[in-house]
Length: 167
Image 1 (cartoon, rainbow, N blue to C red):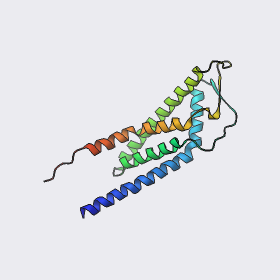
Image 2: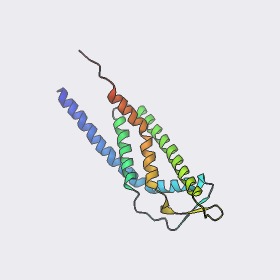
Image 3: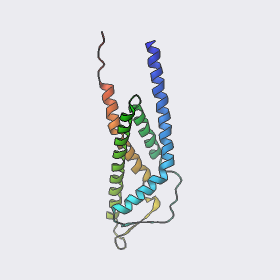
Image 4: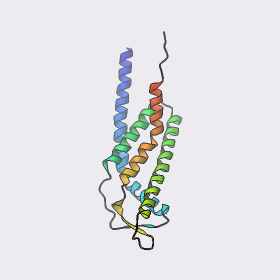
């Protein structure tokens, strides 16, 4: 009976993990244009308008890394919060979102200012970038993976915790 219970729990975790990964990729597909625009705005704001975008803003999909990072991020969040109360799930989700936002702004600002610094022939100090000169997928993907580090640490700690002997 105990083996059957453990088997059902394992199946539940596997199915939940697969669904979470698919949902994460779905969220990534729906939000890619939002993140492109957000990063472009961060580039402009963090450089005080010293970056100007030129050309047509045309793209089909972001990098595979972006979609996989979102899928893995959502998978980790789901696995870590599978049997927790709603308040704990919300706390974990909010912390991850805050870390994600801070890292996204930080990376975007650093990359934007590096683009300004490397410009040697800029007119009036304004760097002209093509819309696709930014690796949006890498910025958002790295931000996503860094934001789930606290969840990964909690999962690892929980797995390493010794089981109490019940003899």
